[in-house]
Image (tube, rainbow, N blue to C red; front, side, top):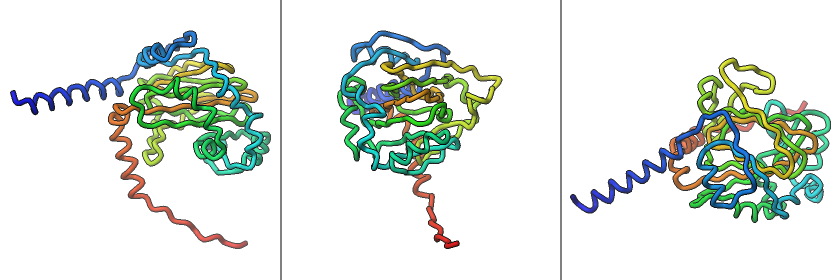
Length: 275
């Protein structure tokens, strides 16, 4: 057999195995809890593709609390209400709104960069990032008491949530329940969510796990697992999302749809009407 053909077959086979692994999901309705693992052990446990809760302490990231953000009150953050519509506001103004209704801030990659708060993430990032990582997304999440995120999932192969202050409550359900959740795919922003509210609705065919994550705990949510977070008093959460090379290849159909959608979407700005 021609060496070139043999090499091609080997490459395709290896790619197929890795892509299949990325798309494979675990659907057991259970959460693992372990002591603070080594990096090697962490990778092994995460490859089971079950949610994992474990202790985590790193001095630098533990400084990322609500009080430490006071000096950045003039910088803009994204603020979302109960309808999950976001606007950009100065942090000082956002905190005032958090006291008057259910609102929260997330999707704050720009804020982390502009304020250099991202430096708090660096050492933890080295401990968490998987091999052959191609993209990393960091975020910070806090807001009003009892604010809940919409039910959603990520296609990133590693999704970590570190509680640095207060606590959060999470509801999760495995990917096998996707047909019952009226999935919505927003390809242009790579957001995948449902209008089902697990805190108020009662889907008859879907069972949820509920877990309280206190300060000092790190929670891993596998790709394609549905989750919604409720903020408890004074909660602050640092988030880490990672894509590896094979994870990126496996999600190319979604990425391609996003490129097409952005290319075919025209934004029109309406003139301001003076009343």
